[in-house]
Length: 154
Image (cartoon, rainbow, N blue to C red; front, side, top):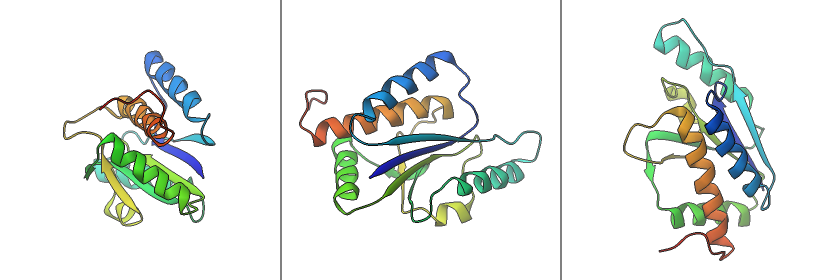
């Protein structure tokens, strides 16, 4: 299985980039990981920005990729549940598991309809920049759970 993370806009803060690099490196010990950025839309109405950003994200999804949205409306999962989800996808032969983080105005309904699953990291509102690090850390945590490594404690 290959893992792809898609998000809108460049990572602004150096400390966020450091966190991304740290957890991306850890994840790559388990499977290939590619991180792709879609250009952020600026200066338009919210609906138009959302539409254009989702079009750009859609172009980054490989054919047959299984799309998972990070969305405030998504399913809340525990870390062990995410680990189980990752494991099942790997074991079922998913070639490309694609996680997408939208821009400031989220996803269009059309883009949402393409998703295999939608998950939420928190019921609280989080910045799109920090969600990048949180998602990577949770994916790493998931693989340590799958491999019975001493990182996650219950």
